[in-house]
Image (cartoon, rainbow, N blue to C red; front, side, top):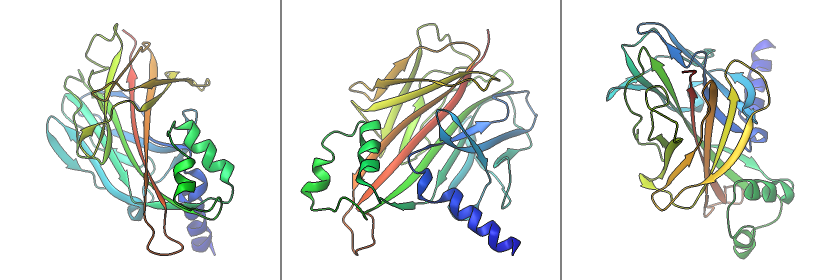
Length: 270
């Protein structure tokens, strides 16, 4: 009975109702000493607030730690929480990477689809939806998550880089080692190409508090770069989403596919 209940709980956690919420990597500590353990939670929620979720292999496509050009595939056990754990690294910037497998949801209300596309600023919808002859309800969307997080080990020296995710946010500034008085710069990629003129959503909150996050919207320039101010002593989450049409082979197949990029980091007190 317990096994059945646990499986049902997992199905609820990873099923469609959370699709419109962010998925992010939430380190227990954004700054650790060289050689100290690294641990980070998976979180799903809204407004930079969400519950912790366990590592599950069947929902995992990539689960890695990058540092100084090295890629470490992290060993993980089913049900690990925190979901990402490593015994320790040498000095430098560490990049946690997690990619989920595809999940699906079925829209029972067209207003929910409208709210989603308006929130993520997808132009030409719902006109494109109806131009394809798609119904207002009962259609399926698939989605996939691509999350990264930057952790300072020791000095935190180093640079974020592309790690080959289908959609990816790359920090062009090192929040632990660079002067951020002129702001933080990130670059958004889709299929390894910069994404120009797309919305980037930035969430910020004072480190160690549960106060409501400040949410601000920015747009990438012609090179896919967005710049925004940062405050010391704050944690940040950056989000970008792409939506693609899909031609279904059957009646129950997805007609849209969304790709969610996420990056978390902290701007420490000076």
